[in-house]
Length: 214
Image (cartoon, rainbow, N blue to C red; front, side):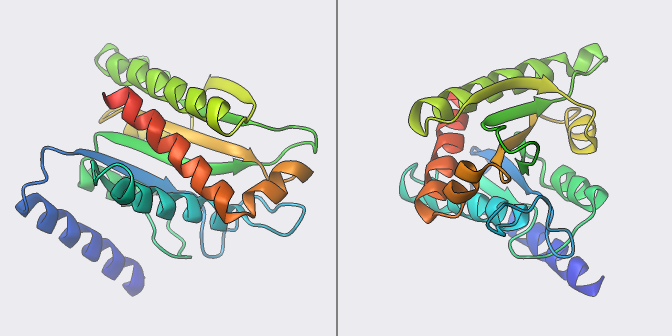
């Protein structure tokens, strides 16, 4: 618990420092890195774990944002190592950081021939949140377009779900949950174990965000 509090305070301190450096004009992207610690998430056929795949993607997004996009975006992760945080802790952190876009990263697991990327958002019944829902759909479409075009993944489309992170974050900003692929698919499980694949996925997501913002 003390470690969690320290990590949370460090993230808030980072936010204050960045705001003080004149970066308030940047779009702030909150990347919720799913699972972690005692919760491995889905486990692939080769033993690869969801928590490791999504952390690698989130970390690579930060690197590519600096190396390719000229530090265009202000990106925060909800975890930077193999730590476990509850959904409520992740949501509270995301709210405190006041992001312009919220993206939750996950991997799928189903029957072995299932493959591809699918993106979820929350269909709000409140009219004042409709803009964020429509923007979430548009953002998801751009990410799927970049992914199918550049990494040749199957496009499984945009779907609606009552996930807690989406239900609570849609009030504040566009919010999506990306299932980047299926770890129990023999082809995709091997694909996600390669650093070059992690880079390709992270770049597709960032390019989709950039298309949407621009």
